[in-house]
Length: 237
Image 1 (cartoon, rainbow, N blue to C red):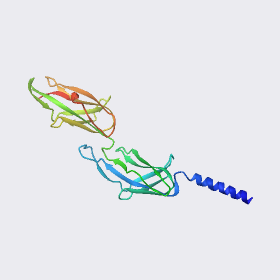
Image 2 (image 1 turned 90 degrees about the vertical axis):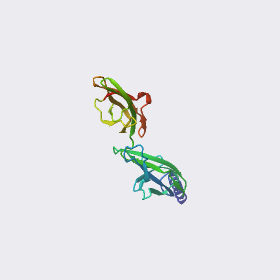
Image 3 (image 1 turned 135 degrees about the vertical axis):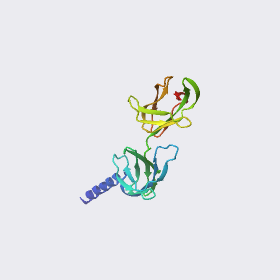
Image 4 (image 1 turned 90 degrees about the horizontal axis):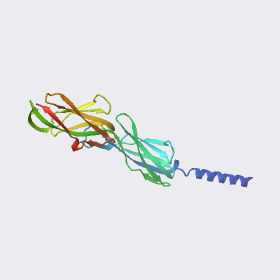
């Protein structure tokens, strides 16, 4: 009986050891890294985004191919975090970017950890801010100027107003004026289909709409209308 009992104990110990070869807690390894925050504070795409240490930010870790995270920690003032007492295996670490709508977008990185080792995770760059996840659409307006049907000149349509609406909708949701160099820009746009329009005048100064279609395929991009689609308007002065 003693021999059989010892044998069963050995089998049990082997089974226990084999079960703990998977990723998880109970070891002497460490997974650590940094989180950086890229802030998009406004819709001025001419300014670089601010990058800073992501202090007091939640970071999560997934053991192996689990469907759930196994633990979470908070970064320190330098954006540094550490998960300790881990076994040999693969780990996925993630934190969240935050869209202006409040929607959370995971940012992940995966590392392999050896027994008793320290694995350094590639820096996680998370984003937030009013302009994050949006795009900007730019175009130009050129004008032909008339007075009582007499040609007075031409040039960029400074101060001319341009409108934007979602495709299929009757009303615009934003309007801007053209700059000195003829440029207009609509900002904080989500991916989708839009119609950009402005007005030209005939000889009796009756405004007629000029409409162009615009598609934004991805967030975080600047979409420039092609030169051959520049609006050309007639303006009575």
